[in-house]
Amino acid sequence: MENYYSLLGLTPQASSQDIKRAFREQAKRLHPDIAGELNSETMRKLLTAYETLSDRDRRYEYDRAYHRFVETLRFDYRSFLRERKDDPESQAKLIFFSLLHLEEEDALKVWQAQGGLHFPLNRYLEREDWMDCTFILAEELEKRQRYYEAFMLLAALVREERRRPYFRHFMGEVETFLKELVRLKLKAAVDAEQYVECIEMLLELGFSPKEEARWMRSLAETLIRLGELRGAEMVFREALKRDPALPNVVQLRRKLKV
Picture 1: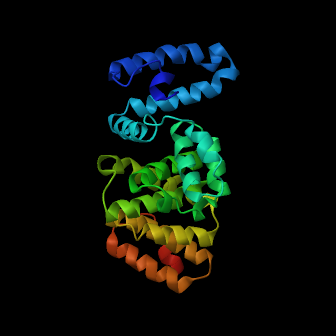
Picture 2: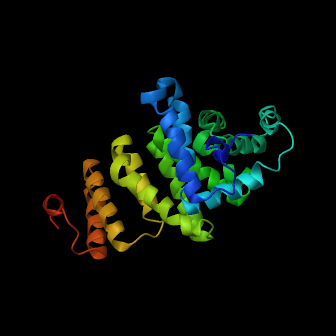
């Protein structure tokens, strides 16, 4: 059965040096400049496998999920799940199973067919599986420029992690992913009302005062565009309380006369 290790021609006992060496050898053989564009998809999967296994924390999470969810299977689990189309629990497990097997498009199709963001994966998967599955889904959605959906999934993860830690050492990567998504991509991808919704949700998750101040500055700017000057003024004043040295506020002060 194909997995990240077999993609690299390795066993789960491989060392970090083994992983690096195997990736370099296969990358040379499969690179589009050498093997042509037909192998570009194989190269993409190879890169995903390497990025996961070369990072100690991500490798630990992958091994744990793989051993628990894949290696113990003794029958055609995918076909079994696919046949149970009217059973949401089976469809939730099919999504996770497909993601673990690098069948991202299939996973997203099933997730979308089940309602996307409205499909309560956490109801049908064990908590740890739900959190792993949700993070991988968010990664795949972000790659496809579906930034709002990726944001909503990441926000749900952070909220749950705050409630009861699971990711622990891996949580820094989750939070960085969320913050970079908001900083670089989200605002241009959603309308003003959705952006306000996202920032308000972000402010409930418990980040640092300076981070919250920057988001509140952006929220105030958006509220001005929506014509909600009173709300914008209140948000801006709260931003200055969190960070009196908040930069890039001259024009905002003039508009709000603060």
